[in-house]
Amino acid sequence: MPSSGDAILPPPKAVLFDVDGTLVDTMELILQTLGETYRRHLGVEIPAEDIRGIIGRPLEVQVRWFDDRATRKPDHEAMIRFQIVAYEAGKQLEHPIPEALETVRVCARKGIRTALVTSKEQNEFSHTLPRLELNGSLNATVNSSEVSHPKPAPDTALLAC
Image (cartoon, rainbow, N blue to C red; front, side):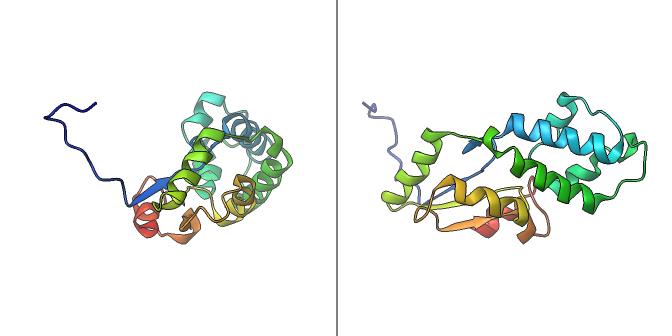
């Protein structure tokens, strides 16, 4: 029960949700597939803790991040293609977070506008989105391919708004 000094806030008009780590636990899948991408394409083993440090950045950035450690000249486009295929092949390691997904649905049922904003690029996001089973619960989705400055810049959130 709020005290007489507590302000009662109106419900939000909109809520923006991230995907990886918020609606879906993808940590193990990302660590495994990026690790394999770096092994095959850079010829180097990147420690998991170093990979964790770049999770949340667009794939275009991730494939270039460790170029200074490469034992061979990187082909970034091939790395991106390989990573997307490897991620999809391991999609059973994606673990949707039921309570988070239900929160999106509840917001939608209550008339709160909902959007997903992600650092995934369009090719990646087009595979993941149907697995979230949020049909009819979203007013917008914005991925890093749709903005000039992806997360952590505010562009995806601003476009969603």
